[in-house]
Length: 189
Image 1 (cartoon, rainbow, N blue to C red):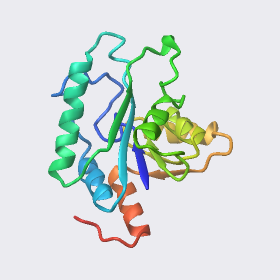
Image 2 (image 1 turned 90 degrees about the vertical axis):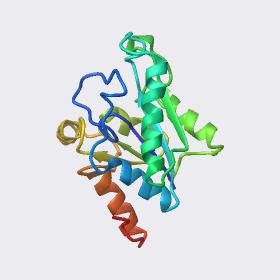
Image 3 (image 1 turned 45 degrees about the vertical axis):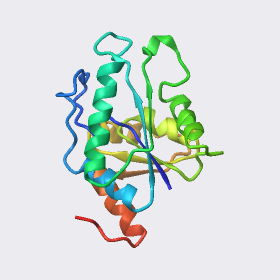
Image 4 (image 1 turned 180 degrees about the horizontal axis):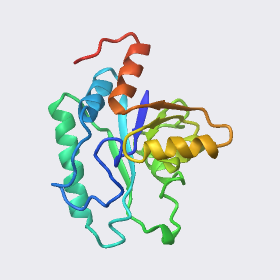
């Protein structure tokens, strides 16, 4: 199964401020291990992340690439692998096709992995935008309560996404536990 993860607030700590340096990119406890465990269980892992801080001039693609290298190296040190990272560098006012909730990033992932569809994939995020993008591509949607997730969970109670079936977990580690348990696989902890 393909598992598509948002980055900020799902894999790394996020408090609403832009993460502008490699030193500021700090994984949520258990998230790196969760990614590695899912990969070792046979799942493909991709990242879809909005990064308007580039267009706003807060950091450049070189810094973003360094953050992604750090993330990939941490995952690989745990025996995992990230198949592809898609990011949107545009400002929201640019009205590009790749900024979530639009599906351009997911389309990039689908094309890079040479898939005909993303149906059956899982989209894990902490925001409504993540969920809407996943739903538009027929992905199963999962909300984590880290990052903006608790706010998003409250928002969905008053403004549900029509036709959406959203599964909620406390964090990426709890999501990985649930997936591996459902598959009858041991937790590698």
